[in-house]
Image (cartoon, rainbow, N blue to C red; front, side, top):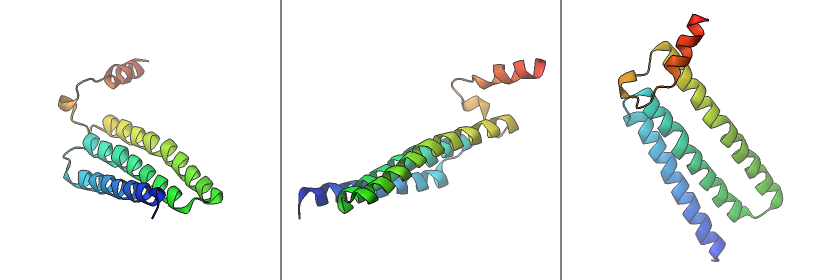
Length: 115
């Protein structure tokens, strides 16, 4: 057993734990914005750690290239999707505005309505 296997196993276990934490957060968190946070940040980082662990284990350039493509696609799509879901939920009134620390969208939406 070499150090690649040890680092790979650590990345895989940590990535799986973060993905599990994201799943529990989706079930346990009370509101939409908290669930969105749980569904994107730990899940994306967990997937990246899993991909690093697989890449260290396989060590073949064609496989690593495919893993990089998956990682880039995930990094590009997950934040954009979460942003769009949050913005749509805010516009529909599904977000509790009393829990927001900063509300930058209300003045923008009011300015759009006036125009």
